[in-house]
Amino acid sequence: MKEILLTMTLLILAYTVQAQQNKFKVLERNFIFPHQSLHVHGSSIVELPSGDLLSTWFEGSGERGSDDVKIMGAKYKQATKRWGSPYVLADTEGLPDCNPVLFMHRNKLFLVWIAVQANRWENSVLRFRRSAEFEGDEVKWEWQDNILLKPGDDFVAAVKARFKELPPRNHAWAEYAPRYDAQIIQATEDPTKRAFGWMTRIKPLILSSGRILLPVYSDGFNFSMIAFSDSNGESWNYSEPIVGRGNIQPALIENSKGEIVAYMRDSGDDPALLQQSVSKDQGKSWSVNKEFNVKSTASVDVLKLDRSNWILLTNDNEEGRARLSLYQSTDEGASWQSIGIIVEDKTKVGRFSYPAMIADSKGSIHITYSHHKAPNSKSIEHVVIDRKSTQ
Image 1: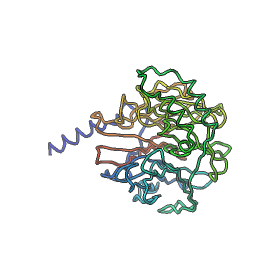
Image 2: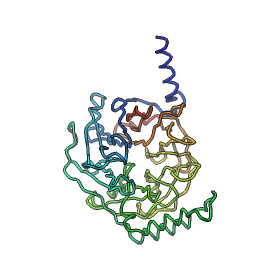
Image 3: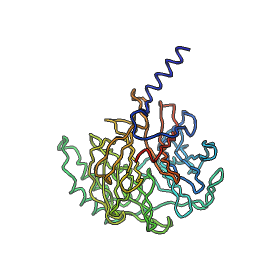
Image 4: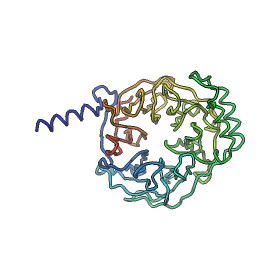
């Protein structure tokens, strides 16, 4: 018995939530399914009109290199406060399916994800499904298609212009080493490279005009872009690139001026800091990427609760994914302060990342994220926070 109690104590110390230090109140914590050996990652969550929740993630024996990876989902019923059994939401035969995103628009449920061709991220194809029947135990899809983008010469011109605005790189270089900026600019001149490899990760921002701004990013170019639709998702166009050296997976928020602010994780040089860009024309063009003084090693999501209350989730470690923290801004993103830790493993064995965050119609904030206790022990955790406690 003493050994069991000691083991439990050590586990509690290792996976710290630090609720006593947090400036927010956690209402619920639950795992969508028990920890398992299969790889699960990249969750998204949406509130359905009934008030129930639907979550999705990808699952399989790996990621881009494993052709058995598929898009899974599960439903949370408010009446029982429980998650139902997981089931398949999408599966492209013979290809890995990754990075699903769920959202509601005009009483339709959308699922957007990527199918990875040739097992390489830079060959990924954007796909989407749409449904009007989603309140049952399983979603019934009515339409499926690809989102095909064809950035043109204007894309290349924007990349060249924005790279000139970036600060000079301060790390060492060698005469024989290829220049990073020149390599990326040259790659954008290839129409095939511009057309493929755009990947989802974060929920879209839907403007009052009905425009859908879907954040996408490229591991090939190591920067981001926005796919946008003014036709309720029937057709899609592309924005100017959001240019930087490692700014990927944008999370979008609209400020009181009508500007769209993109916050991104840093996959470039150390130190890894929160990345930011601004659009003043509803997501069509973007300022050159800038660093913000908040650590961000692996993932970001952001949520606007009201004009003066924004919250942001990020991995704010020096490196890795052993801690996921919540930040708050009361000045529309001009500054950010930590308000607590969602989860942390001080042994740095656990990996907690790729959060999705929404506010429901009843005053609660819902977060899902990848909860990897060990390489062969993985689940998706669902955390519910009292919205009033962040005010």
